[in-house]
Image (cartoon, rainbow, N blue to C red; front, side):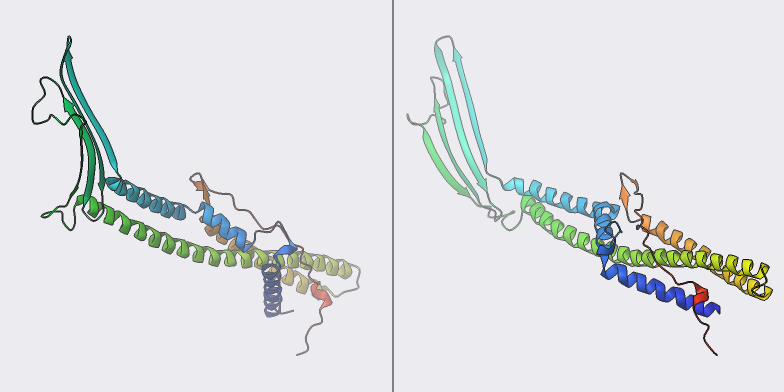
Length: 282
């Protein structure tokens, strides 16, 4: 049996297992599916978390800047009495509504009275109700510091969304590729491991038959060579799987540390023993 036939045999079995599991995930409810892997990466990758925090920070800055245009109500009251004398009583309440287009609406009520109150501040008996609109005609007509900060925060939100989307797409793309590499490496190792067990059984069986005189000694050499070839393939498959899992673990973090990788549950893969296949005629 040639080494080329062995490689083709393993390759076709791995492809068949990949198609079977990818398109029929219900065969093993405990297997780590691609959907579950994407969910793990989405919830635990540190760069995605950082991107989400940056977007939240941009939204918080916008709310802070938007607060400069919230309506403001205020009340000021001062009075002075000495003995039975009422020197003065000054009460002033205002309600201001700033707008993002520069105008500010103001309304209020004041009532000032007293024996020693400033005549300029004395209001009619029932108080004075006032309202007005202020418009900047010079500097600050088109833009001022508050409106500039608000606009900057709005742009920051858009930038945060775009950055998060770009980072998310890049990470998801790379995570899917490495998942497929791991998937292939995992089932390659499983197939080669099963093939190694069959080759070992075949080697032991031929050795027993040779000791009993039922098989020539040359067959034991061929079986041992075949066993060694598969053993080398198994070591290579285990090394490739370990390397891929190392990369895979970098995508899932929890509390600042790599989260333990959830292996796929082993699926039973039945392989027909090599010696039951007929050698092709050349």
